[in-house]
Image (tube, rainbow, N blue to C red; front, side, top):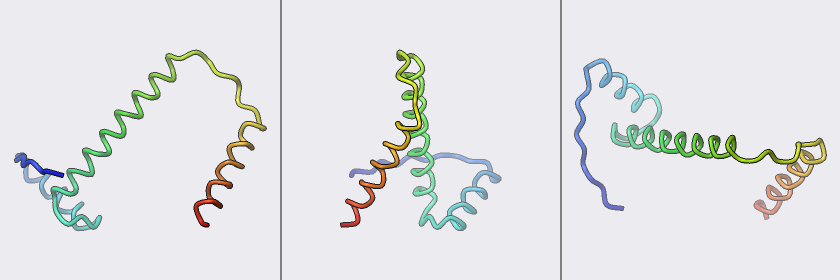
Length: 84
């Protein structure tokens, strides 16, 4: 993956915060930390879009206890299959 460079200016208080996060959370560089923040923001925006699309869609069938049991069964089956 090709990387581009972007320089940003931060007040000293924010730079100190970034430096602390890099140190405390195991990031190698401030760039890694900022990339992670951007990825999380992209994920948040995607989730927001999905939630808005769901809110605008027609109502589905009500979720019953049997529906949730089916989900649990599928998760257990998937977990068992991935261990093999």
